Image 1 (cartoon, rainbow, N blue to C red):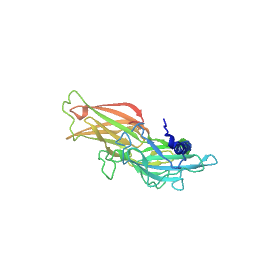
Image 2 (image 1 turned 30 degrees about the horizontal axis):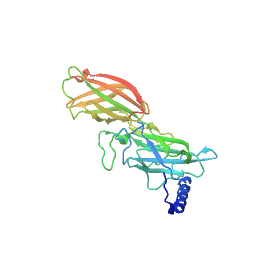
Image 3 (image 1 turned 135 degrees about the vertical axis):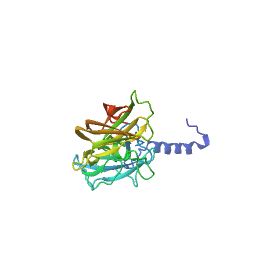
Image 4 (image 1 turned 90 degrees about the horizontal axis):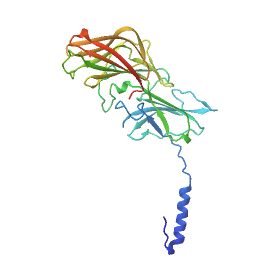
Length: 295
């Protein structure tokens, strides 16, 4: 509520008019594009959400005569701009601006890289996904988890660009179950390896598709440990069409090896429970259900 002193009525009325005029003046948009990146978990890579220091790559194309321009390795409206998360906002070395021509398609991916081709960029999941993150590098697990997003036909009137990321690789969770004759604790130096998959791949940034390198060789991948009895590993989508070495558990001088037939689909998490016995030949394997867009 405003109170006026008689001797200052005129001055305050003028000031009030000026204030009202300012308040009623429409806010002029600055033309800066603001990105909101949503992790597949929908809330939060400490593996489940974006954290301060994470860097995504962003491309954007505009529309010509209401037709979206194709994404190219260069010559787009925005070309592989690196945006860093500070815990609240995503920002780059320079502001990103909207096209004055209207609608745009905006692409995002994680982790950031420098593609040499837009639809056949060579890439690989890490062979040791147990390595921890450092100041200069992602953990082996996170460096293997390729995420991709696309917002179609967005414009400045829509406000912030929301990029809903999806997992484009597959994930295998290995749970170790102690059988009746396995009475010991699972040692801290236990190691788990995944066999019979090709880690090398190509990425199509226009669709986010990760494809197995048809000339790549199968290699074993070391899984990361997340608890005493649970390990997990990121896999390039592919099929293992005949019984082949699957998961190996190494406990001290004992190695447990399993075989399996499995197809790894993009964006899907699989769980396998392996019941351990004192004898490597007495293990039991149970391949469980699937979960899309895991945390």
